[in-house]
Image (cartoon, rainbow, N blue to C red):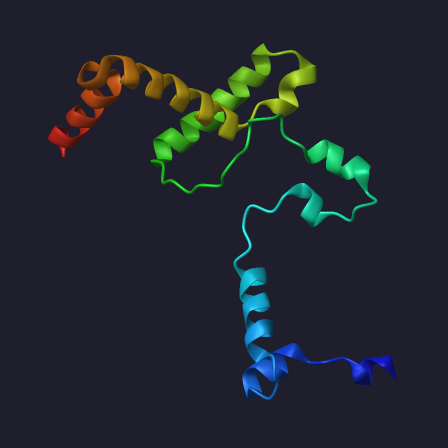
Length: 133
């Protein structure tokens, strides 16, 4: 009986029969376009054990990004992760990821770029790559 009393928001939106369709449409839009949710928004408030595992250290916020890599670089990245895993202690192997490697490599390259500018390896390699094509 309770199911019959529930309001069908999608039906109302599509038919335009609801008084507060605008409010419902904006709520639906916010839901569709929600990004960067915190772990507390994804898990029920009472599930603190799950929340504690997902927390990042202060100041270590992350954003998802998509960049295209050559097949060679992609394979090299996998190889690097495997080789690093061979060099580290077993307790830290789970923390070695391709994202961590890329993040650290970019940090090092960008630091050198800030220090040397147009004389940096980054600029030299980009220009060399452009001139070869």
